[in-house]
Image (cartoon, rainbow over all chains, first blue to last red; front, side, top):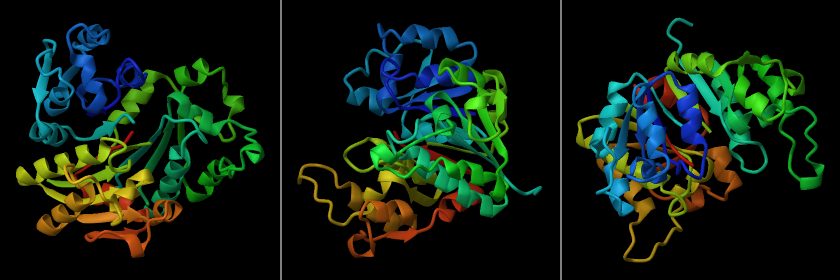
Length: 98
Length: 121
Length: 119
């Protein structure tokens, strides 16, 4: 299953709920959630700790728009909108954690 | 029902502060007419939607919580509350205005994996 | 693959409509079909023909109209949510139609994937 997170992980508990509830699969960070995948962000450690259970992806146009395109942490795969589409195709279902 | 899809409606937001809970319920009621396999789950602040005794006169807003009781008449009977979310808000099953099945996080995650369509509000 | 897309937030206020549009465009570019976009909650405001952004900004409403025309995308606005927010036939932008919530459930049934963009 593909899980889509769109909120800053420091301002919302959405990512935590997703990590605590979901059994595994792909997680795509979009919109304000992309900050979590940047070096030095307090959530980066949370992502790294969950990497055994989940495969993380970040929507690069959103990260670049926010001036942090060069600070992506290791282990998170960058995707463009086409890659976002592929993730939805390759998973049987997807859930936007609104 | 064999060709029915499994639909899950995920409610993670409290009522009244925003309209999501009310408009989510409207979709659920409509979905009942399509003979699909519908589940309704409540996580995080979404569990507050089911709290008994909502009195909305003072905020001059319609109390839509009785509509959760009508779900049964629409054959929407799979209502699930996440145990950890309920407990973190000081609530117990007795606080809810409808019968629900309380699931652990792990059980909730497994249920999500079974779904064909997940709509969250 | 056949896609359904749900947009739950209004234009300009939230990035949801932009993300949904760029996702739809990418899906079409990859040869997929975007069968229906359903606008719900404040998302119904994406269908207002009265929207007038500054000239140097993207025109979110017209962008949806153009996508619908060029790729036969069915743009559906929820009637109950629309009436609450003052969106009616008289101010509905081209390419959109107002219909019931059943259209959202139908998209879930008929599409291979349903992707939601919201807050």
